[in-house]
Length: 564
Image (cartoon, rainbow, N blue to C red; front, side, top):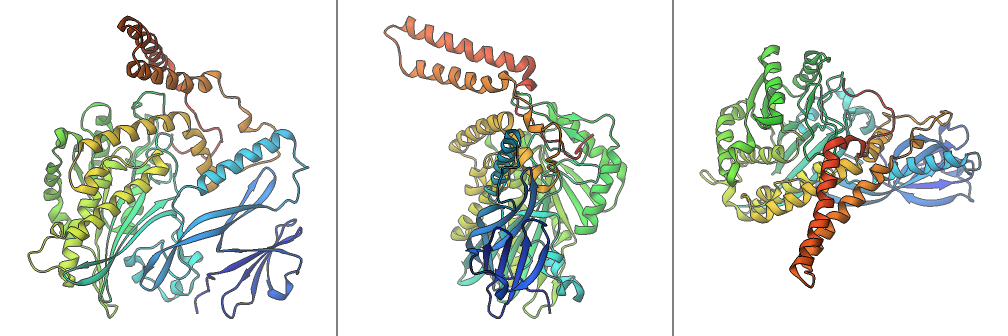
């Protein structure tokens, strides 16, 4: 019998110990954590002291070591997302971070401040959406991987058999109807914890071949006992490159001249082929300007590797779709249609027999693997869904999914929400181009919203992403806190220019706008105001161009080297 995963827990706390009690029917287990020795043992309910302070929890996320000592992270609130295959899916919405120590008197003032900063970093990560879980179903694996497992795998606990690549995930679930036939439609995006981070501080691959912003997205259909799925992946261009922020709107990408690109590239695709099979690479970046060298390098690496398991397609998204001609995306879909048919999808019938296997995946990328990538993935997924629903008998012969207005609205909004969730951690805002994903066409309002999100991204990427990157590295264990460290990395003072520049920029720009909206007594006076604040804005801009890297919020924690 497989190891149990309990659905309801009580956390008891005394000055000496934490007790986590399983409250499911028939359970008598109590996990005991010694707050002094950190020893973990199993006890029974009668061992919990009556004096313990008790509150309900819904899971243990883990433990982490900070300056003050160890901390226990527990889930204190959850919301039900839905059910599929009779398994309940939950979203963790609130957490407690509990110190093993009973007092902080052993810390100096500097250590207290550092510990406070580390706790703020930890809470920042916990407050970003993406912690979905089930106590009865393995969310980390695709349907196809779960169908091809050994009896020993099935006997493992959910924790033991989980895919260690995935910590964060995004899940959308809907009960849908077409032609009076009801089916469940699920979208799951699993975000890798390897080479995780924020937009401009984590690009390319590391020495192990892990790509930045790698996401596995699975679309699932459940109808009348039959299950179908279609899997795609996305990830940063798998060579050693960087794009550090310097206050310019688009920092120049830098391809490493010293790194062994082929070694990392081959490691990346060797693992992808083992996990997913054939790789159809869709590179959506510009084929001119600053992005051109990356496209050329990617194409050269694929050609040099000479693998029969890989096919490379370069599609200049911005060039092909300029002037809002997004109908031209059909050029790419037509180009890959035969390849998609060859890759197929996974299908298991109501008797549990595998009818079809997916033979490979589309691996899509743009610069961030967010906006352009999500548009293309949603179109490829719709084409697969069209074939699946026809095969299952939900769609009649000749019927098009695009003609099903009610389902199309659900489908487009779900993919747009998926794009936003994947973008928020990496780029700091929701995705761009979601007006097309939601409506099927590009709109002027969508362009305005993209401009707004781009401005927010610019601010966050330059003035808060150092903290965000440090938070992720701390959470994932890429940085380990050493309370005996003689010099704290957090004690490095911020340059006055870093603190002053955002204020100067905001004030100058705001005053320029205000002067335009609120005219003075004369046009001469108004023009003088506008010129003054305009010059201030332009002056700030030229300061940025001169030495922008001095002003950005860079990570301060020393972690394992991620790129050469």
